[in-house]
Image: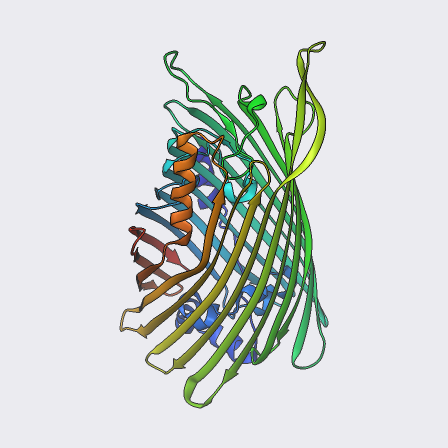
Length: 513
């Protein structure tokens, strides 16, 4: 019933997400209904129209991201499987989603309103050594066991924002809330709930006739409550409080209820060209502090501090006859440092007491990308060729017992897209091919105290992280105009990755108006 009420709310209150005017030509096009529909479609599908989306995440810059108001209401189904995978995140997923997103500009007021909402019901397949959710947020401090299994997950998301133009300034505010719950109906039986609240305050200023500078402050609060229960009296798999690479504190094995809480804060500066031609640049910083506690112990049992920095630079150049070249490069670094609390048993109190805090975990990552897009837009069709390259480096270390792994990874991909208006609709098709190569991959684990299941998990995860692979992908979208101001669409997607034997496909149906 809870999910049905949420879906009903989506249908009654269609949210909104960013799109807005950039020049006089776009405003003129928007006055004609047929051209408005075509513009909406192009801005949803054209790779070139979404190439610089990362530079428009600040609420004070949303007005310059798109040229058309729109509302999208859709529902879809997805399924994925893979043989080699990260044990803690599962061997794929299967489920459905219903959602809406929209952007609306209030005429002659200087206001923009946007938002998004969705409900998602998913089965995560064969998740092991992790009885919790949101692994990317709480890693490595998960509650785990070696049995695992499929996990049923429901997510509820709502996001909204508004911005106001005042002469050369734009002021914006945005907020989002994601609720997540997951459970399993067979032993072990985890019950997980999490909430993630994000808030952003932003503004932007027109520096001159060509460039606009945006500044934003970001804050986030995340909390996850978890417990694991067993019904069977014959067998109960042991629970581990993982601290990294399968290492755990034996004193905590009897504790089956946990709480993770984190606070994040940061900011960003972004430079964009007002007419889309020229230089793009951004600098982002985010700091996160997380504490993990267990029911019955007064002090956090583990914690980490994470810092993330990202720099991005892009350049857009248009040529004659609808041709354009877009370039974008990014460099990002992440450092996570974890501490464990050391406890002793106090006989007089019959409880665990805090002795000290030791820094035992370190994870450092670097990520570099370079993308280039050549677009050719004609009256009756458009086509795009996108080249993507990436270089990643990760070095993860745990102190006692000493365990370490590292690898360098290079990725490259090429995508081709064709978009064409038809007599009663619009169609777009996209295909892609890519490869991933690893170098300098090595691991060193002290297995003297590790159970056989943990050793097998570490080897499987390492093989997944360092296996070279190739992938193929494709997507087709077809839109049919039902009436003035309304079109229905269907999107089919599929991909396949070699070596890890991954297959994914999805189907989505919706309305755009």
